[in-house]
Length: 350
Image (cartoon, rainbow, N blue to C red; front, side, top):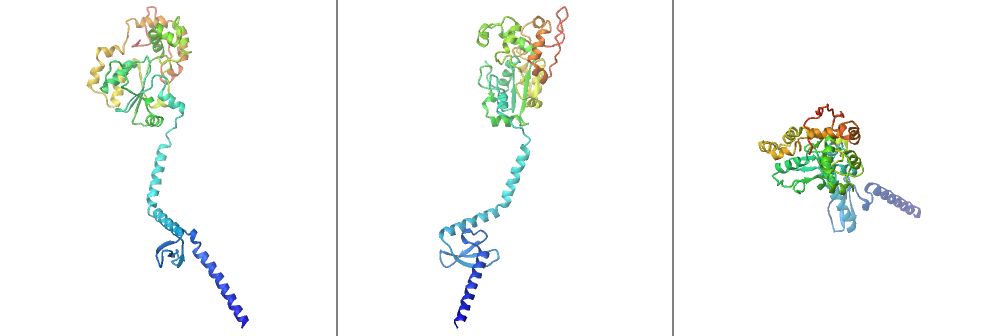
């Protein structure tokens, strides 16, 4: 009899172990529950009917903390299932945006500084016409500022001191980058043949004692002396006209002083700002004066300062980038014995 009881006890213990093992493998630990769903409430607030993916049910006692954990998992699973297509769609959109923008080159801090040109003459920005205009001192800047005031209906009494125009330095780095690589924005630069420009600078500033004392601490003795001083001190009037990384000039409109009126019409036509009113304004006598000879002896002055190749060679070297990027010819000015100027037309000394 005792032996029979022992066998029954062993069998019961064996069954209990088997049941415990099966229960653990099939249902898992309640606290780490992830594959089951809460179906409905039963008996009390502390019991729930749980079913697994095999549709087997069992009644378990759970704590409030465990119940909250299960409900949270249940909601999260449903959210993921319900919004799966939306999430996939969002990921595809993000991937498309990345594919579209990854060709845009990044700009270094130095390049951003070059573009904004924080020194003195930051580019003009006309948001109405989506134009960024890179201007240079002694390259018709008075004319261009007057024009930009006019097409925007702004006062133009003193264009150089006016704060009515917007400049690139007023925009943050992100905005500058976006505008520079946005093809809907027109980027234009206006330049002048370096020999003409530096001579104009010398005739205008070189004899101004107060200006020279401020910048150079002395008055230059000659044009050659002036050229040497410009290499020692920074100044927007004589710095090279190439101020940006070269690759940015590839997609720019480039205008030159010798063809200022034709370029004006081309630029304003492109930004949809050209009209008969502008045409009339350009033909006003005071406007023409801003874009033509300031003296009747301009050719004589060119002959006076460029009557040999020495100074021209110096300028070719100093402004090598200007000649290269803007495709100015490095050809010596040619004068005959009567001081007739042959190689440069429409010389403008302003």
